[in-house]
Amino acid sequence: MNSKFYAACGAMAFGLAACSGENGDITGTSTEPNPIALISSSSVGNLSSSSFGSRTVDLWDPLAGDYHLNTVLYAARLSANEQADGHWFWEARGADENEGGQSSIVWPVALGSDADSLSTVIDSCQGICGIADLKKGSMTMQPFAAVGFVMARDAAGNPTPVDVSDWNGVCISYTSDSDASLVLDLGDSLGALFYDGFAFPAASLPKAVNPVTKCFNWSYFKIPSWKKENPDGWGQNTGLRAAKQLVGLMFRIQNEPGQYKFDIKYFGTKADGVPEVEDPESAGGAGVVDSSGEFVLYGYDGVLWTPTKNPDRVKTSYYAENVWPKNAVEDGRWYWSTDEDVGGMSSVKWPVALGAENSLTPVVELCKGVCGVASLKKDSSQTDPYVSLGFGIAKDASGEPLPVDISNWNAVCFEYYSEIPIRVELVVSDTSDGLPWAKLPSSRMAVKRCLDWGHFRLPKDSIAPYEGEINDMSDVTKMMMHGSYEASRIEEKVENAAKQTISVRLKIQDEVDGDYRFGVGAINMMFIDENGALIRDWQTEW
Image (tube, rainbow, N blue to C red; front, top):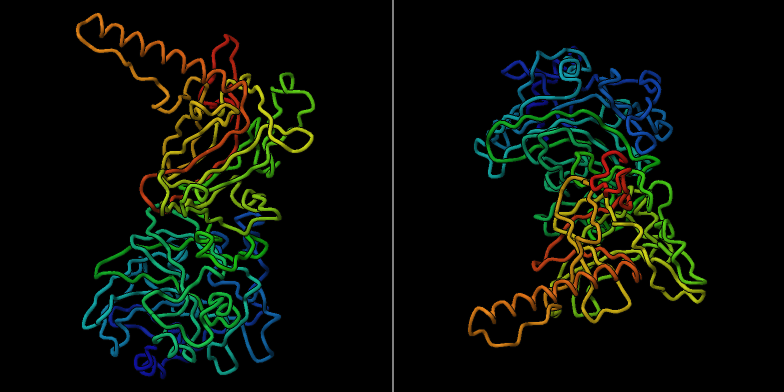
């Protein structure tokens, strides 16, 4: 790619790491950049400590003074005539006359002239920041600009593929005025198979006004959907196969003509991080971790459930042991179900593979709670599509569920997020009037909400209709008294429900088919202050 422009710079390449364009910007490409920008494995330095704890391993941290990426992390895989690279380069289609584009990147400061020409930008921004100035020119596709790095080079200075599959994936922190993508560059030798590199495996990065961190398993990288036919042998495990012969990696912005600011703050591997998932499409974008503040659980402590300490079970015996039936055994194990039994086709897309016997422990350990994507599909069901998850309270010696009095909890309190409201149900032994339920409102950010027993209600059809004729005000009064009586009766039933609860169930349900993200973290009961009043917001406890 960009071969004509690169050839024109060749005479200067031995004196500079790259060539200057008309606006003074030094430029390069993913497969033919900065020919003299070579480093030895000994010059890269030691692996820095991770800013994500044990979840990731740093390749590049500008706050630590890194000007290039530590691609030597697996240098033992390089042959004797290969050297690690890792210097940042950039690419804009305006540099290639064959494409007809006129895009460029506007940098905040003048660039340097050595191998780390973007060091001045890194010092200025504490990252790689700039403006992608996209100009279509005569291009037939959307213009784009990209920044990236090459893994390693051979003795002649040519980019060479490296097996980095042991990274497990990659993580990036960034902001961007536009949607972007993270592209696995497989070099010119495979470029023809992938539409001159435009169809290399990639992962989508959403627009982010505030700093966000995204982590991707290799399995998340896919060939763009617009390329109808995959190259031979590339239909399965595309991302992992690309990781075994990776030439470079690019952060690419491709959009309508315009100016889009971006800032890359961190780049790391997922070594020792989230387990690989073979089919991310069936797992709801498996392996994606978002630290933007949206759809993130924080691992709080809860009296009933602290996910980071006891991922498998809720402590249902807390404050209820003295009212348990004889021979009752604490349950609390998480379960999940769908609307399949009533004709629906809904499912849950989990972020990682479940454990033995469908255990949610791997999910909890990853998410600091139970998180996933509720994929709602009605099909022939007569009800709105739904999925649900919950936990039983107690079982008898044979494993059958038992009703338990949990009224001393005063309430159930949840840390959660959800794109649609969650219906919290008390599953009871007598379901003739329906299940008492209360609503947790939708929230993209993790919040904490308490539902005391007064929040719960029975379904609307539980109120018996007034069957008398309405002729005058006395009949109206009778109707109102009937309604008050029924309402009082329902309130009593709800109060009694907490004394015979079999399980607590959270239902994600909507009348519209679709995919909805949800997460349930720590669970608590409601506390009583020194004056006997219920504490509803938990701010003093969390």
